[in-house]
Amino acid sequence: MVTLSPRVGRLRANNPSPMTLDGTNGYVLRVGDGELVAIDPGPVDDAQRDAFLAAARAADSSYSAILVTHGHPDHAPGAAPLAAATGAPVFAHPAARFPHDRALRDDERLTFGDAAITVLHAPGHAPDHLVFVLEQELALFTGDVVAGTGFMVIAPPYGEMRTYQTTLRRLRQHYGNATALYGGHGPEVRDVRGKLDDYIAHREARERQILEALAAGASTIPELVARIYAETQRGLWPAAARQVLAYLIALEREGRVRAERLARATTPAEAALLDPDLSKLGEGTEAAVIRAELGFGTAEPLLSYQRTLSP
Ligand SMILES: [Zn+2]
Image 1 (tube, rainbow, N blue to C red):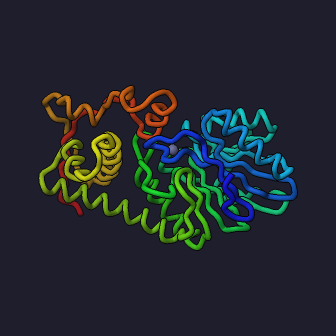
Image 2 (image 1 turned 90 degrees about the vertical axis):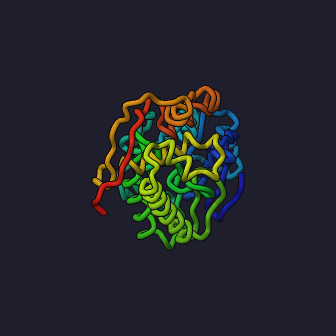
Image 3 (image 1 turned 120 degrees about the horizontal axis):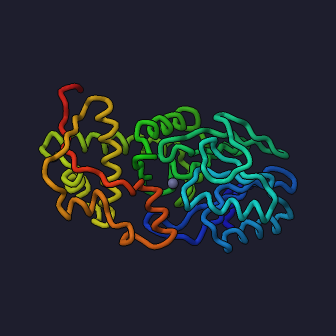
């Protein structure tokens, strides 16, 4: 376990991939004399479960609760085996579809021996996403809302761009003064305000790029991706396509973009971006993570997008 603060340790699951970076971060929080809380047990993985158990033995402590940021397959499935091994209850969002003992309200305050954790509903990346705030250290546990490096994919149908942006602004407004941010992937962040500002600005810049590319004549998602992500490795273009779709859905809903179905068939190159063969993107649990994170599964029709005259 990597010690990050007097109360916080990190256990990284052994599931590295393009979607999970170095692997999913699990956290062990000291919340009282002999009392711990686990955050994000990760995938079903005996080694990661045993690491959580070893952390409790080493601290001569036991788990009072297992908190899960969201239901994606790299964060939640390990909760059941860890609960079975420890007897600790699993806490999750009311919309969570994995087994849990208690649903947490927005702004609910969980108190333990000598620490308290505030629960925030934080939808956008996933509808069942929570962010946890350890009050004693003013530390945020952000799951896939904010990662230590890079930016998260917001992909339809479960990811929703405007909802996600609202979540980011809420964190920035109320917790910009946090001393640490511990994401679901990547390293810890100490400049929390700067990180949230980056995330907010990145989303706005990407949206401007999409509107500019539309104005310059790109009209389909593959054309937009080729223009905007020209510098990005092509293996990531299917993910980029999902990301662009998330913006276009928001812009269309707001009346700033109009979509119409193209009469011609999708070319193989277009289909490779819009409806990729998932078996080629990864295997087993990695494919499950890709499917959940990118929301693949329904074939996207080939649409042509135009800007409207409204601002
Ligand atoms: Zn996720």
